[in-house]
Length: 616
Image (cartoon, rainbow, N blue to C red; front, side):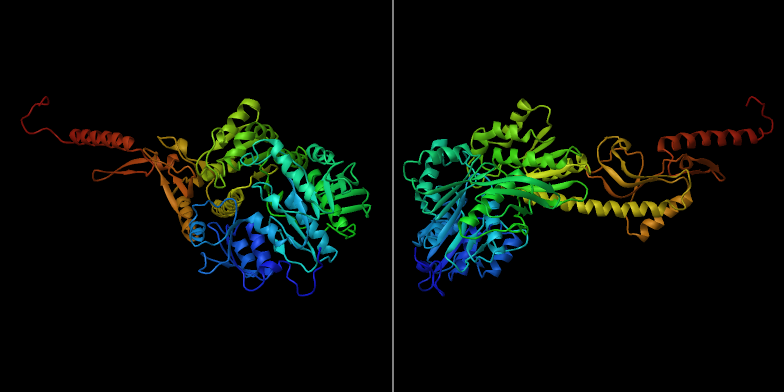
């Protein structure tokens, strides 16, 4: 391995003269770090994405990655596996003869001349990679890195570094893992996944077996993963003989166990080949304890001696048990999209609840092929929740597969776990989801948004709706308190009064504030204060043929239902006085009766004409 010298570029083959790279899907957590790494390495990098978030856009801007269409001059186009060949920029590059490479192929090329620590496996590889980066940074070890996620503290997801090492998360989903020959391979665990690419578990195992055989220095695997251990055992007298193979976990060569846990994190007890006796980790749960052990072991194999505080500053990765809100119900988001991940996630969250409230899961399946293959397993894992809402499948560019819809998971749940209420919110579903969650969630509940698609956006939208609703509720509570002062005892004033039963159609939501004033003075006070506070006023009569919106009426609804408003008086000159709350039918009847009475009085008061008999 050639040693890097000061001034060397980590990807010198690409930086001999101007090298221009355009990235399709540059907003994704796979391509964005690669674009940043390429730019920091001296390449001229541009990219485009149909759904670029503001946060990722800012990170790309700081790294001098230009966001825009395919440039006139470009040497290479890199694309994510979600980009179809029909994409306009892909088709344009192909027509111009520009080389097109997948993200994994480009990553393998740019790290080829460095000592690669490849973090792979079915679950936990992003968290483990981020923890390795944290431990190395804490030890001032300037390795390069590429993480397939966003740090919670805003740190860039990639950096070139200044020594010969680079830590990168590599992905087996599209087969590009075959281009890597790591110095150290860290395999967190192995589960059969990506059935669109690996038709049988044996195909996945063969891929990792080949990766282990290409690993130059050391392999680090979980002692609790049977599939990893089986593959390694098959190599004992073959390609891996004489190579260093280590395990991590409770009984591994790098031994670890979760010793204690609190709201701020956990302490893991270390043994075996580990240098420190224990380590404080700013994360929680058995799954993260295993990730931390793998990260600390990898750092030690790289020549770094981690201390007790190596992971005390770990800030976490977006969408990995990230707490979005702890005010009222706790709201968490997580990237889990495989049944094993969901089971581990919900088990951990159930322990966190400790029986104080309900666990409500909102799950968006990822890819039709995965959903079709594991729908029964998804149903079993989701049954660990107390309530489940299923959104439509996030396709990631994949064509629909028979039996691979969210409705299929819902049907499996109703068949296998009928005690757990589950529903499928078809189509956009956002409005129905917001309404259902807002109705059912309690202050002690924990709501978790789960999936690898755009469900994180749904989570934030719902929280935004809740915050607006909370601010609105506070406003209305203040108005109700203010207006209540000085009202008569007979005046009714109620918050969130259902209006459906007050209409003939029987539909609709509630009024933010509902009043039945008992007299003119109280009505005047209601109207004056509503005007002062710019609150809309709606008068409700008998509710005939009236449709109230499902979300209710964001205003003051006044009903003149007090009997004081149903008075009827006969006035002089053939006139009558009627209260505004008197029913029209009653008004007509009373007016007709008054007319007959007045007519009768007039007839009795007029004397008969001269010469006429009383009978006339």
